[in-house]
Length: 293
Image 1 (cartoon, rainbow, N blue to C red):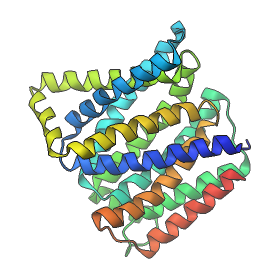
Image 2: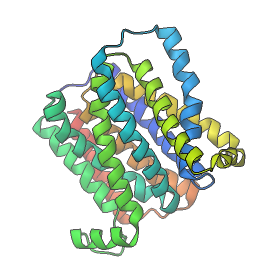
Image 3: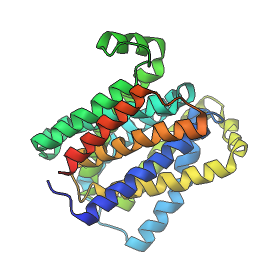
Image 4: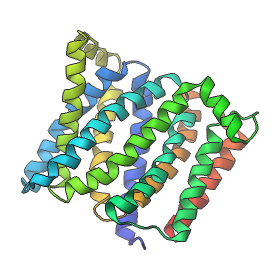
């Protein structure tokens, strides 16, 4: 499909918002454990989506909404907890690029679920983005091979955790699309945050760890930024996937996010920018260009 200028700008804004969201979550993951962090972020986003519903109006909710919505909530619970676990123990410029596997899974799943078939050029673009992410996940001094990747992932399990996150999120995007066709973006955003926050909060209660929620005081400004940028990113994504194929939204989001992860990893966390990283980001840039053709 051809992207109109307005849709392209919407997807670009969504992509940069998610890059800011990744940065805030990396900063927060070093100070707050995954479970309380998920509860805090989702609970803080609820008033934002409630306000959006008040402005947009309460939609008609079809009975068929709940199956894809609740499935997305369940997948997001596991994906968010695993995401923060991986971020907590590994470099931003290594773990975030692995989310480029999301569009591969999304593209394959969107064909039977949504009937969306990408063109040959767009498939080539997706392939290049994924190859770039694969290169970023390997040690700079190691060979470029599946064997080297498997050894690296066995040494650092955060990479394997992030692959699992990518698969879970690839399932949630088509489910979110199906859910919003039966309700609205603002309402679905509210359900996602309420559902994920409630499930993880119940886990904290069962484990008698609710006191860990007070750890938000360790980084209040970063938390505030994270809440706002995550709500903006999710809101823009929910709008974008109603106008653009989900496979293209995911590919552009991750292509831009990968480049930003390398840059921000260097500026904020002093992570090395290596030749392999530069080459990988270049591959992803070519892939994005093919997607836009």
